[in-house]
Length: 135
Image 1 (cartoon, helix red, strand yellow):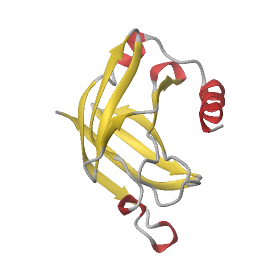
Image 2 (cartoon, helix red, strand yellow):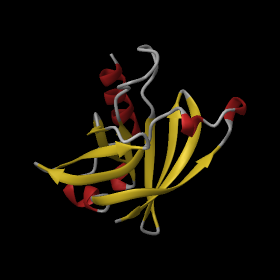
Image 3 (cartoon, helix red, strand yellow):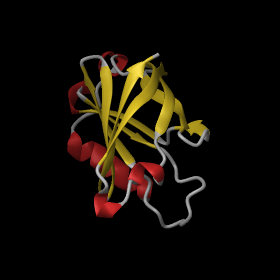
Image 4 (tube, one colour):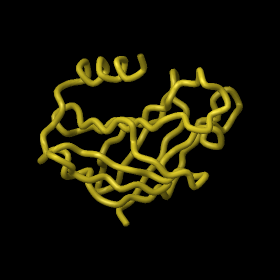
């Protein structure tokens, strides 16, 4: 069900960019800054996993990647989608280790701004942001 919902989001946001569009996002990245919003008086970046270190690469003409989160759990991204003619990237990772199996997976909406990745993390509502630099 969740995968179908993400597929619909990708279709509604715009067509996926080709390999050339994905190439700007490819590389090794490290999150160096987390901007919290303290939604509901809580720092969601302490609860919601985000990729502290990640590698994004072209595989068979599509962008794919793996990450290590802030708690040192490593895995492949469940979804890596280049959208809006290559201007945006959606990253989704699973909820492995979440307290509640009904919890929604966070969606990281990423833009490449002045050579850095800028992400807004949502799971229903905006929770926090992160910024990553190339390693």
